[in-house]
Length: 91
Image (cartoon, rainbow, N blue to C red; front, top):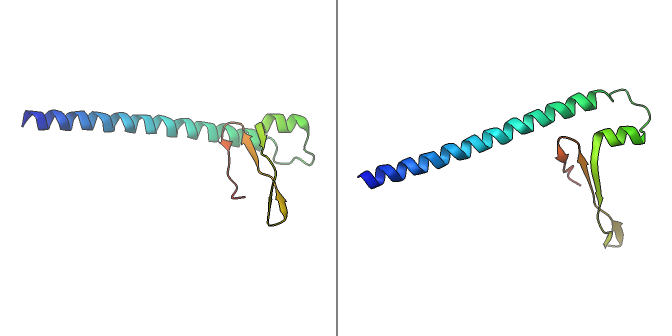
């Protein structure tokens, strides 16, 4: 019976640890999204995209090798936004 209790305790401690990690990750994500919203709010009325604005909003752009699919050239680009990372737009 003691072994079962100790096993349950170990399992519960692992679950609590995993939940703490998930909470910390969610808190960080929430903070990053808030910072991105604050940053993007500065550019709500932008009429011209400048290199400075791009530098403020984007941390990295990855351009992948071009491929031809069914006779159409396709090339994937990943845009890594500050604070929120790469967002998959379903393309």
